[in-house]
Image (cartoon, rainbow, N blue to C red; front, side):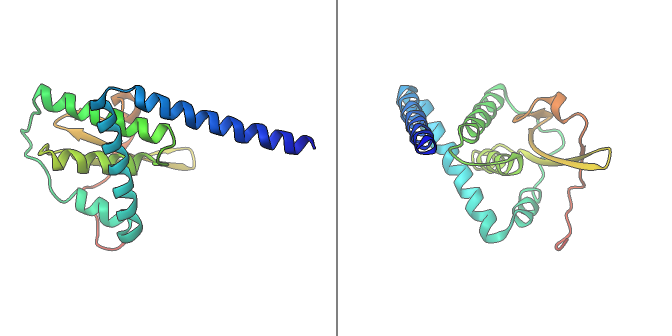
Length: 166
């Protein structure tokens, strides 16, 4: 009997969380709702492409086009990139889409590229003891747009030219 009650309580908690999430969504400004829906769409699209073609193929494609070395984004472009990164993070954090750094970064890179902003997908590694850590982030010009620069400081970016098969 106790487990049943706990099970019912858990379901009610989940239902209440869903109701709160819906209320928060409708409480957003229409422009923010649009951006959140676009962020969920970008994450879903990248997730579907990854299942069909594999993440390695998507990364190779994303890293195939490099912006000019002297590219400097305008303040408007930087602000848009930060806003897109915020909504992708928000969609992933709220468990709307279970996306890790690579999927979020691929989605942001794709979004920025489609908006005409020549972003760069970076993948870095860091070895802590016997464990190899990997992380993905997006740069626009010399600006990291979906992470704190201090958070990626210990990661060494991998070479940009990935082999066809690993």
